[in-house]
Length: 252
Ligand SMILES: Nc1ncnc2c1ncn2[C@@H]1O[C@H](COP(=O)(O)OP(=O)(O)OP(=O)(O)O)[C@@H](O)[C@H]1O
Ligand SMILES: [Mg+2]
Image 1 (cartoon, rainbow, N blue to C red):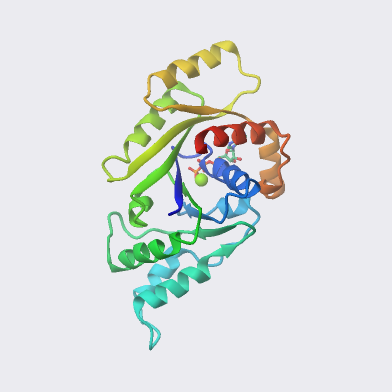
Image 2: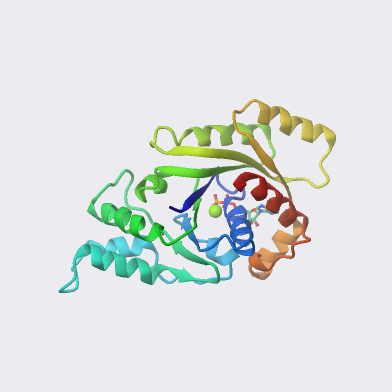
């Protein structure tokens, strides 16, 4: 069975950035094959990886509601389409969820999707899900057992409290978490003692184990602006180095 890693956190805190760094980590360590799932309606993980998405699962789900080609069951059709939607890269495949159905829709198409995901999941060592702030996609895809939940926060005390609340959303969704950790992202570098103490105090008031702090990084900004893949970032870059140390501790 694959290990499932999910990213959560409020808008713009760095979930997609950390997802891309995690794919870099897993592929470089040979922890492959990986299925990377972009569960953001506004598909964008592919851009950080230098990949192009043609079809999203949302588009497939729409087609599934229409006419089927003759001689094919809905399951066969879904399976075929999902494979077409997979973008293959070295060590990992990428899949984008695209636009979701209306809120709380557990219609037939979603059941087909969940079944197809179950089949597909068996092919991978790790499945990484880059979420938007909500986590409904996890239940839609039938992912009820998460091995690692990484909650991302900005360095403010309020941001860290929000991260705590987001982590608590998994309970009502019926999602079980084996191990979770908080990553505080975009910490000014160098950070003052006072700031580090404030972050520490806020983290202590949550029940989230601290994975670590990641610095605000000009290299990441530059990489994004020039459209270069995050997979090509140098191992010496501080944010890459620190992220890898966090992943080492989390996954081992
Ligand atoms: N450590 C960092 N240093 C500098 N810039 C960063 C860092 N982390 C994230 N960013 C920048 O912040 C912006 C938001 O990051 P990102 O898209 O990863 O957040 P997100 O949580 O996935 O957002 P959304 O909720 O919209 O999906 C991006 O422009 C990204 O380059
Ligand atoms: Mg994102």
